[in-house]
Amino acid sequence: MNEREALLFLNLLSIGYRAMCALKDRFGSLSEAMQAPDKDVLAVPKVRQATLQAICDKRKDSILHHELDLIERSSCEVITIADEKYPVSLKQISLPPLVLYVMGSIEAQDMNSIAIVGTRRPTSYGKQAAQDIASALAGQGVTVVSGLARGLDSIAHRAALDVGGRTLAVLGSGLLRLYPHENRALADAVAQNGAVISEFPLETKPFRSNFPIRNRVISGLTMGTVVVEAAAKSGTLITAGFALEQGRAVFSVPGSIYNATSEGANNLIKQGACLYQSVDDIFRELPALHRNGDVLELPLEMPAPVDISSDEKKVLNLIGTDPVYIDDIIEKTEFSAPEIAVLLLTLEIKSIIKQLPGNYYLSN
Image (cartoon, rainbow, N blue to C red; front, side):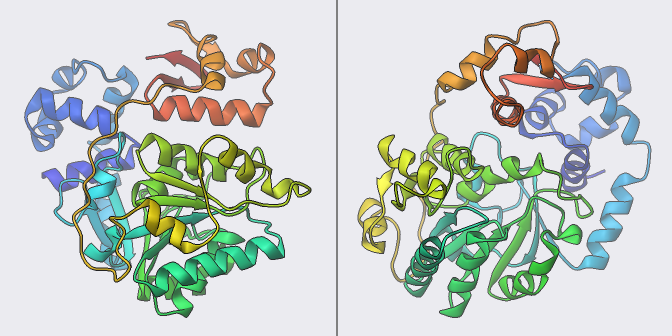
């Protein structure tokens, strides 16, 4: 197994960046790690035993060969974190994907990009705002990035395409399980004028837990994120949160105080997000963003660790070195089950806690 195959293999097991680094530190290369005796792999520090055992067990079967065969038959491009084509801006987030599956092409000019995200059930105001923002940005050479979801994501992609611009769509499923199904034609159009991207193996179904994870990629690919319409508990706000952690700009389109779909977007402005009134606000806030789409070098550094939020602290205080069941966490907080799920996922992505089988959680 060479380095590239090893990265694919680890990604198939949902093994992330930190564990990959630990394996490289211990063995010098992933290729060596994949050939090491089980006892040596199981002795790698700072990696869960269940993860190491999965490596030992699964490297003996054919999951990698099956995926390689799918890749060859699907004609998609695979970019690993070790490749020169891997986006610089994405490599510099705290937990970059090991692998990107790409339908279409990611170009150097796509570093000059802005994400547009929002509700799946927009108002007519939200639809018009997303269309105008995407058209204005794409028409001036800025790549528009979104998630191919129903609602504002789809509107942003189409608006960019309508003015002859480039757009990138980041999925919460594998490329062979495109979701939502009705956006197949849109995905094909995006691939012709940009790329459809996923970090998930080709046949991965659109599990709900995948979407908050992919949101860090949407924000990580870009210089800033524009939130158009989002309710107070919208998943869109997860993307905005990742953008802030990654040191990227966050813009929010103000909405009606009488409309619940604008509550989250309005709250972002109260919390310090840049008020969006015209596309000039974006160019003024981000002078490195080129209006003509020229290739640029992004002057990004690895962002400093961001303190966890007060809500995350409340949950973290209930999780120690002994496994805690999710229902016990829910009972001891004022949060709903969906809110707890998002908070736990965020803490897990930050490598502060880890999930055990059976919905138990443990601090790292």
